[in-house]
Structures are given as C-alpha cells and as structure tokens.
Image (spheres, protein in one colour):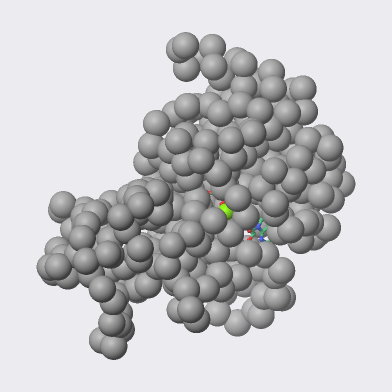
Length: 316
Ligand code: TXA
Ligand code: MG
C-alpha cells in the first residue's frame, strides 16, 4: 500500500477514537485524537502508563497552537519559526479545550510540531491535534522502527509504517518562564541552539514535576545494561554486546554495534535505541554495555538516556 492511502486509513482510525502508532522524526508515537478523552485513556491503558505522566500534543499548523494554549507570546513564535517542524516540545499554559487526561491535570500542555511529513499528513488528515507519547510500554526502550512498536504493543489498532526515524531520541522539552527557558528533557536541539533565540533561565526553580521524563529510571532494556565508565566493571565480555562509539573498547566483546562510522554524536542518537532493541532480542547476549560520551551538546541527551536505561540495573 502506498504511504498516502495508509495515512488515510490511519486518519480514519484517529477520527473513530482509535489508537495509531506513527513515525515522527524522533521516535514512533502512539497517537489519539487529543480532544477525545476516551481515546486518550486508551493510550494510558495500552502503554500501562501511570496517569500522572502527561502527553505531548502534536500539531501540523501553527494556528492549532492558538486553540490549545491560554496565550503564546512572541518568544513562542520565534522558537516555532526556528525549530518547528522539529524535535522541540514547548510546555505552555493550557486552554480549557485540552482535556485534563492529556496533561495529567497539570495547568500546562506540551506541544510540538513533528518534523516528519508522514506525521504532519496524519495530523492534517485527522483534522485534530494528536496526543502521543512514545509507542513503547511504560519504562521500556523507545521505538525507532515499526518493528519495535509491534514487539511491545502488538495490539495497537494500526501501525503506520515510516521506516527508521531520523533523529532517534525524543524531543527536547522546554518550559518558558518569565526570565527565559529551562530544559525539562534534553534532546538533539541543544541549550546553545535555544539560547540563540531566548536566554536560559538559571534562576527560576521549576516545581517538581511528576513526570517520568524526569524520573531516574526509564528506557530500560529487559537485559542488564551498564555504561562502560567504571574501571571496576567486571563483566564476562564473551556474553556481552557493546554499543560502541569510539571503536576503542571493542576487544573481546561477543558482539559489537558501532553506532557511528564517522564518530558523530548525531549517529549515536539515531542508532542508540535500535542497538538496545537488537541486543535485547539477541538470545546470545546476556549483558549490554554502552560506551559513554562527553556530556556536552547532544552528548548530554545521549548520556541522559543511557543513565536512565542503566539505573535499575546498577543495583542488581
Ligand atoms: O519526541 C518526542 O517527544 C516523542 C514523539 C512521539 O513526539 N514523544 C515522547 O513522549 O517522548 P513521552 O510521553 O514518551 O514523553 C513525554 C514527556 C512526559 O513524560 C513528561 O515528562 C513531558 O513530556 N511532558 C508532557 N507534558 C508536560 C507538561 N505539561 N509539563 C511537563 N512535562 C510534560
Ligand atoms: Mg517515552
């Protein structure tokens, strides 16, 4: 089936209050009509996601933003102009039209315009904004292919195929304050890039958010994953898979996935979750080791995901 007819089908599903997994440029999302609370409730059920964890609302046109928020100042439009469509989510005061279930009762809503033609077409054809978390079971590895979605959510009403995602990690989430912006979740759009538009707010204290984007554990593979940053790390490499970046650690590992031949951090982001899925599915691999990178620029987002993937396993 060609893309345009599968988007038509997917849009029909959205209009009927069903769930559609769809590709964005970051990861696959599990979408529902953001204005239909019953449909949104099914997202939480299928993902086994706690109700306190709010969803991002995806739009295709800037005029859709105006309905969803109480007010948007000039800074929002400047950011939108520079980064949308693209992997930036802005958390803004929500209007009454946004059902409470979408925002987990918070007075704010996270909004983004995804930078992927299939998702934009889906939103346009559905004729509504689409609320969507990543299309994985709660706490598990995010999906960057339709196969990853099928593995974790085999009962989803429809999966829109769109190949492998091109960014590979979730959007940068920011909150605007009176003094500038604060990053709630790091991503491929870095603080430096955002600062070219508005200043970072180093002073306001962001109230504690009960949202797993901020929990210590997340993105967890079913197999033990450790970051190779510990000299005392004693593991049997003959049963281990290495997620390799520099190429320097590869000796003696049973299997190695080199995430970037040209040693570019963007490739690490693109291939990281896919590598975790591959090793998770490989019966010969007992433990996954991931190579750490310098925590600047995109490296910050990569290390954030690796630490969260590792968190539960550090204790075992
Ligand atoms: O790239 C992405 O952002 C992907 C694709 C599908 O768009 N979506 C995604 O959604 O990563 P999810 O649900 O896995 O992560 C969304 C996170 C929540 O866990 C929460 O931390 C934050 O976004 N969030 C959403 N609405 C918020 C709000 N009103 N205030 C604070 N944080 C919010
Ligand atoms: Mg997620």
